[in-house]
Image 1 (cartoon, rainbow, N blue to C red):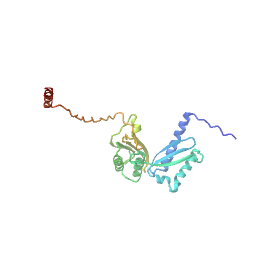
Image 2: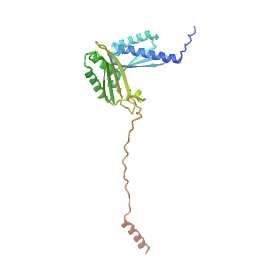
Image 3: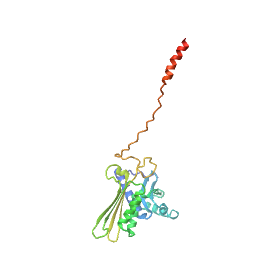
Image 4: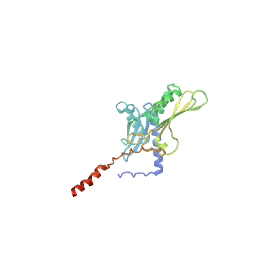
Length: 247
């Protein structure tokens, strides 16, 4: 029996389907791996296999004992998205600098608020931790019924933060989380201005310079070359010597 013909899909439909797949996968992993410091997911598609890289701060907990946890997640994803066996592979990647990861810090702030810590104290603690890790700037917004029945928003800022333009996509890492408190839902938004990495060796940091940042290079020091000048006595003695030899 001949193989069934491959069903072609419209390009627009493919982009929409990929976006829905990523959004559902991200929502599932955010819910399941919140305590493991889940910081995002990357999907790499190959012709015969799909690789899903889970970024987290505690990769041992993501893998589980003898890889049991990651096998369970693989089975759930296969069943939900109709993948064939051995058509999908899950990997866990450790986040090196969790202080510069907005998702990890939003989750950290969420657990602090759920633990009963005061909003101001929790936000200042997270902001100090971010700024101590060489971040250019940080902004934390907490909105909702913080103390009284009237909802309000509290903003905590430190350092330098850009809001518009192309560099926002490369330099600012943003995460939003919701905290289900007893008095209502609190919204958390964490924005981190990442430092510039001109070498491009550190993963996650931008290596392209900002358009409005001008670096003035100091001029090189001028080295004074030695000047050789013939002495007057030597010049006068040379013609006299020539006259004596002529006589």
